[in-house]
Length: 196
Image (tube, rainbow, N blue to C red):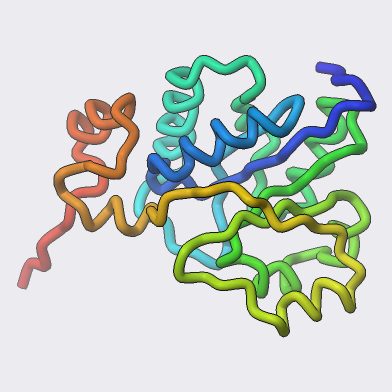
């Protein structure tokens, strides 16, 4: 799918373990700013995931279908545990060189240790979304500047909700409504009792 070279697109890869109302809000807000937002579920090599990527991608796809917004594209084929691979796949598929890689402020300090970080910063700009409880520290800002990272700090107002909070909340209040039945019917994200 070729997109106009003049249009900026956002890449929003997420563990989606599970997708939350926070993810939903981010996607809705990105669709107001960008010509297109490409999203996918990924395996973060620094996290232990509760559910398999096939389940997480199904949940994210269901959320995207429920949003019914032509500016939000679910494309699991660009998923990789390495950001550089997802970026390259996205550039090839959408034929665009104007990409913003969306991350939460909780990941700023992690990006410097990402595989091929030196190549990533030549390929994309970063849109950093502030997350409550994860202030952007001055040393992280200094590192972004030292590495000459192109970035913007978003003014988006996103609720303080994480996937781990959803996994701990048995009443599903932070789960998008379109996902509740799937999660319940498949016994996803239920606490497991230790058996002696």
